Every structure is written in C-alpha cells, then in structure tokens.
Image (cartoon, rainbow, N blue to C red):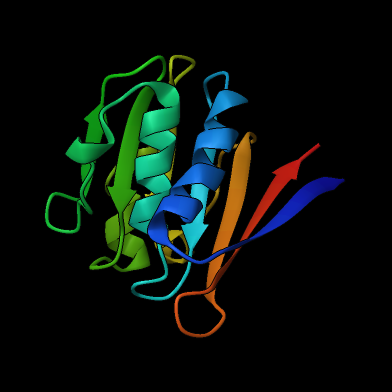
Amino acid sequence: MTLSSVHETAAPEQTAAVARALAESLRGGEVILLHGELGAGKTAFVKGLAEGLGADPGEVASPTFVLLTWYPARLKLWHADLYRLGAADAADLGLEELPGADGVLAVEWAERLAELPWPRRILVHIEHRGEDLREVRVERPE
C-alpha cells in the first residue's frame, strides 16, 4: 500500500516547504525519486530537503554538470541530477550503493534510472498547473 499526499504550491518557497516537512520524517536510508519537467521545481524541493535536514539550502544547486554532490546535515544529503544521462550512464554512477543508513539520496530526473533497487524509496512528482502553480505529489510505501 502507498501513502500519498498532494500539495498545491504557487512559489519555489512553498515547494521547498513541502520538502522541509518531509525531511522531518526521514530516518536515513531513504531515496527520494524526483520527477517533473524542466523548471518544475525539483531543485527547489531538494533545497527544502536540505534545510529540513539541517544543511544550508543556499549551498544546493542543480548538480547537472557535477552529477552527484552531498551536503553535511543531520543525515548526509546526496543529490544526483541525471538530466544529461541515459540509463546506461546513470547505472555507472553507483547510486545503488547510496545513501546508507546515515544519509538520504535525492535523484532529479529519476525516470532515467533503468532500475530502482531501493526498498525505502519515496516518489515525488512535480507538475506545472498553469502560471506559477505546481502540484507536488509525494508517494511513500507504507
């Protein structure tokens, strides 16, 4: 069974607030798989996760050219951006070895992953709903 919540946001700060609330419930070992078109708010969501975990959200940037980075916090936040990768290239990153019990992994463009080996995954779908409105859907296995 999956627990879902749906949030409507009208600004990046509101999208980040949804992620901050989610971060409070994280205990380590979770993988957040982010889906949404370019500019939907995936990085704003990760900034909210960082803040909720105790990292500096100002340090979070889309790691499109770096591919993978991490931020020290209550739980280490790993942040991957697969936008420029195909499934084969994404498999070579070794993400299946992350995040460990002391961390959380957030993956932007998660649809580029061929496999989803993590039992503790949380799916986040962010969709444009016109102008600045977004629908943020969070799905967690029970």
